[in-house]
Image (cartoon, rainbow, N blue to C red; front, side, top):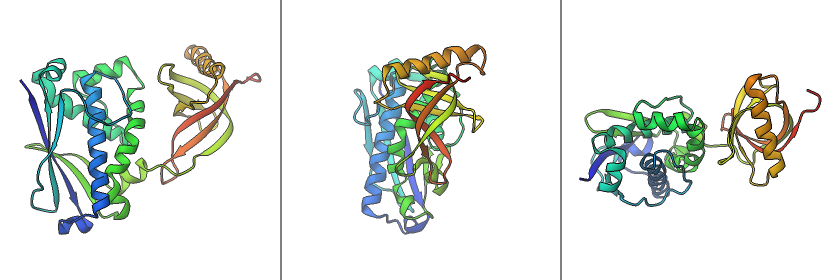
Length: 275
């Protein structure tokens, strides 16, 4: 039996209070919403598989209903057809969907949130870097979702669940996090060690000795296999003692609009022979 999930997306503030939005901004926002929903729903339906393209999903339908009165409100329905609903668990689809959306979208907009439902918790237990990988693939769709706020910082966007209320709110603050600065700076000779690393996805976490904190990273597509092996070596040797496994990396530093570091894109890695 198919399971339906309904919610409204509501734009308030600025021109939205007059029930109008810039056509291009509104279209971009809807496109970002559709992509983000597809990526997140796919991860839920496959119990952890991450994909970067936000296109259609077999046996899951997304519908946009005619606008409602009041500010700028759209009604969205997602239909989980039998095969997918049974894989997730028909009785838990709704709760699992909202938990996955709340957890991953908050993380992707710079807000800490841990999963609460069994499916999402198990996904994270099996892949500690799942939140980080999801945040990366959700970045562009959520940038698109924020498009109206980019041109009018008075606008806010709410995702509202029937009979529950607002689940997520996006504002100028979340815009400043999700929108990265253009042309990341290449920083050389960063000292530290790898603390987590998924060799299949190329995502991980790196303890920066100078910054004295752990920073998310993903590897550049051009990183040589020998350099990737150095990351694995660093992880192995730092597991027992975080003073071991020291390496030097060159990385593009991705920052949010306020200048805070979001992640490194590692371009080069070598062992620190002086450690």
